[in-house]
Length: 181
Image (cartoon, rainbow, N blue to C red; front, side):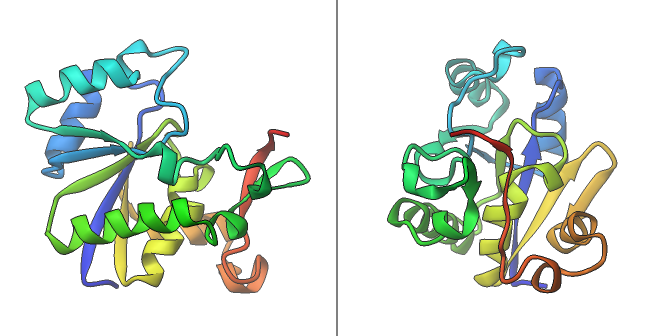
């Protein structure tokens, strides 16, 4: 697969030191927060202000990209029957601008990880939206999980139960699990 790699990670219920240890294991230098709202109700150490302060102490730069790549966009036209429609998001300028930022960082060989809250990549837009789009640009995505790395292809296999994304869902036709509107 692809000419290069971008990583992804979910903070879930981890401790801050656990997240840092995983990032260091894969030599991540930049953590790009792709949550729409950069805060955690249950784990305050994953709130934006804390990450901006504490990650640099661990030689990791924090950047918030939720306005470009967040899974719950403010644009209501990105929803179908109350669910986030990833096919619609892919057409939006804000999303394309965010993907362009990732492509540029990747071309500069930056060691980056995309972070959201969901631990399992198959339950997150990191895989269903961003990972699928990066594959279209020949960029491999490796998801950091409790059991090591899972490739984008492996996660899609889990998500589609072996049917393949184009057979079961059509061309990248994923939506969010939950209804928001």
